[in-house]
Amino acid sequence: MPLTIVVGAQWGDEGKGKIVDLLAADMRVVARYAGGPNAGHTVVVDDRTLVLHMIPSGVLHPDVTCVIGAGTVVDLEALLTEIAAVEALGIAVRQRLVVSAAAHIILPYHRVLEREGDLARLGTTGRGIGQAYRDKAARTGIRAGLLTEPALLGAAVRENVARLHRQAPTLPDDAPELDVARILAHLEDARRSVAPLVGDATGIVLSALERGDRVLAEGAQGTLLDIDHGTYPYVTSSNASIGGVCTGLGVPPKAIGAVLGVVKAYTTRVGEGPFPTELTGEMGNLLRDSGNEYGAVTGRPRRCGWYDAVAARYGVRINGLDALALTKLDVLDGLEKIDICTAYKCGSRTLNDFPSDLAQLAACTPVYESMPGWKAPTKGCRRYEDLPEAARKYIARLEEISGVRAGIVSTGSERDDTILRKELLRPYGLG
Ligand code: IMP
Image (cartoon, rainbow, N blue to C red):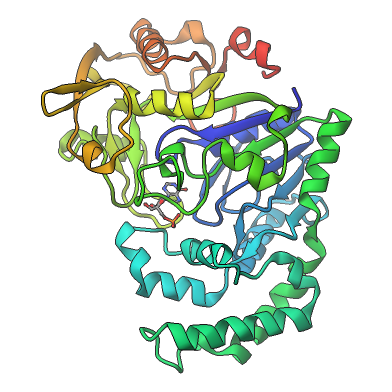
């Protein structure tokens, strides 16, 4: 089972970074397949906290090759800042980091156009992600491969900026982000520094799989933010769900061994768009504060709500999940009662399946069942049998209603604050 996939099964921020870091101990390659620095994957080991935006979360394991795949968009400066942050922890990264020559690069004008333009209404992360993917789809994007060809890179930037001067009347002609000389001068240092990292990412991943080396595909964002299968238009610009693995890395579906879906023990979402189980009152604030639910990229407060099993079941079906990694169970410690959304009410109808129509989703209200909370803390718990009985019952109910077992339960941000249910993971070659 050489290719393992870790995918977010909600609206992102499920805690994928921690799970990828944990599983990476047994991997030779960890590869990001989609998204860009809109992701913020937090890895905590001992007293070190690393928030990764572009570099795969397997980086703390020195034998892991880290691949940034063709399906991603790369901000060169953000990448260099991140490399420096990893190196500052005494971890060598450059010699085992590969950026796909086919990955698109984010340029300063992408960021400003996003802030000034029509994407802002979605509550994006403001990192130019959507604009870079827009150029990719328009066949005007600039790919990382050009970083090794400065003359061609310069020509491509010039051509794009000339087009923007014609097409972007919202920006003044003298906007610094549209100044070619300035862009190229600024780009030059980053270009020299990133060019040696550019390579054939797909070839590396395929060769590893052919050798039987274990490869982990790391999802960014979540299934409900997938541009095709999420809550469009309130989504990101790439395929965050499982389909993005094949297109974003260039691997055949037959290579896929195990698919692990990360879900929080409750639900959060950042940005605009329908969110049936959202709690706007005191309970929402409590979840936000206990779970430190503030965006790792933008610092924005996340919208919080109860576990939505309708959405989770959708994540299970879309991705063909083999098991769940249930995170942040400890955030629910001390609650009197915990609600689970089992279905939606839409007018007089009860829906068990996640609606594909956004207007219908927006009209849905949750149908809840309540479970008793637990008094004894789960925080830091490392054995399933040590969990309070009510917490075990809660997990069992989530498994039953979501349709798949929880092979991993996370009880804190530290790598070791984790319960590995080996009997559930072993059939998939994990744990
Ligand atoms: P964009 O990906 O910056 O274009 O933002 C599009 C939508 O996806 C916005 O609602 C963002 O808040 C959301 N989003 C993007 N990346 C993440 C993430 O890593 N976690 C959670 N939400 C995200």
